[in-house]
Amino acid sequence: MKHRIGRVEQEIQREVNDILLKRVRDPRVEGVTITGVDLTGDLQQATIYYSILSEKASDVEKVQAGLDKAKGLIRHELGQRIRLYKIPELTFEQDKSVRYGERIDQLIDQLHKDEAQK
Image (cartoon, rainbow, N blue to C red; front, side):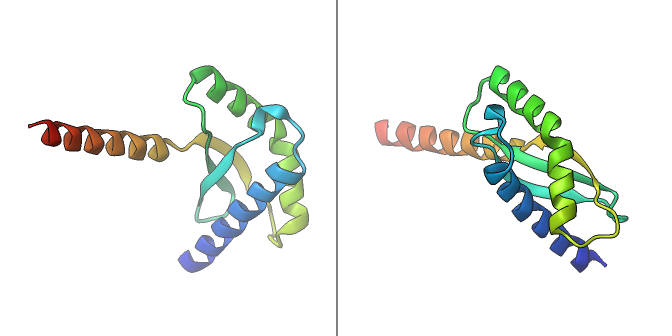
């Protein structure tokens, strides 16, 4: 069953990226990339993680509002594209791991610069 959930998560991620690119016309969600999907074991809830290039809190809020508004359209489109008994409820969350990775890279670069100056 775990293997099936993983396949469904990948399918949802691929389709939501495509839907955001081609079907959602809201300018607030331009440049959004879906980085992952967590699906509950009963396939009823899907948490969709996204990242954006901007770090500003206001931009994150705008994107979140745009995704929440487009949730119905995205879920409807998923229903057309994916063969599941019931399309899961969607929740969007910003993926913090991308920012965390960038911060780690900055710290490593700073260490290298400090070492070079010694």
